[in-house]
Length: 127
Image (tube, rainbow, N blue to C red; front, side):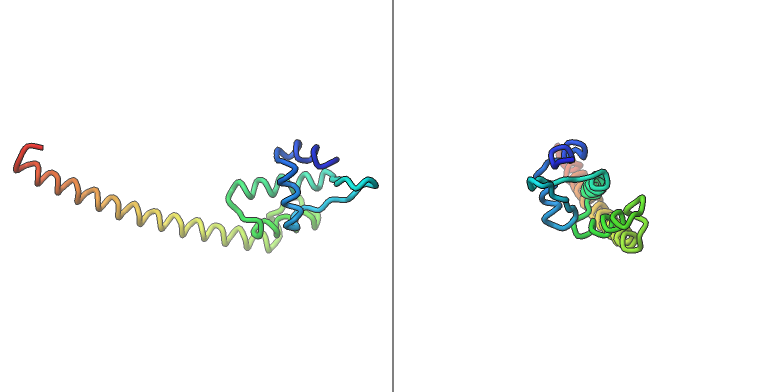
C-alpha cells in the first residue's frame, strides 16, 4: 500500500508517517517510481505507535515496542526492553499520582484554614 492508504487505514496523516520514518520507527520499501510502499506489518507498527503516543509515551519509549513487533512477536509489549519501559512508565505514573495526592492535601489544608478564618471573622460581624 502507498503512504496515503497506510495513513487512512491507520487513522493518521502522511506527515505523521514521514515523521515516524525520520525517527527510525517506520521504514518503507520504495517502488520503481520512488513511492513509499508499506505492508500490513507496517500498519501494525503504526497502530502500535499511535496507541503508545495516545497513552503518553515518547518516541524513544516506543522504539522497543516497534523493535519487538519487527522481531516477529504478535505484540510489542512482550520483549524484555518493552517490559522495562512499561515498568518505568508505571513508576513515573505512580510518582505523579503521589505528587498530586500531596498537592490535594495542601489545597485541602489551605481551604480548611480559609473557611475557619472566614467563619471566625464572620461570627464577629455580618458577612
